Length: 91
Image (cartoon, rainbow, N blue to C red; front, side, top):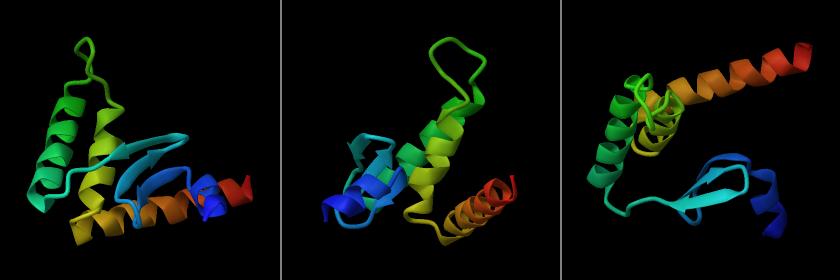
């Protein structure tokens, strides 16, 4: 089990329902609607990234949170992950 935790660098751990970003693990709300609200808020404030404190880094984080519950966003995230892996393989 410990090896699984070390290999996951980015995503949502299906066992613990925590958001994994590198070595950070952040718990997600248990309610589906609250997770969707958190994801939408992150995307909205990420679009205001030119303002102080807010940042464009919030958009992919919001999409990651939304991908836990919305199949359409999950497909987009998976396509980007596959594209990124293929791109890194050829380099």
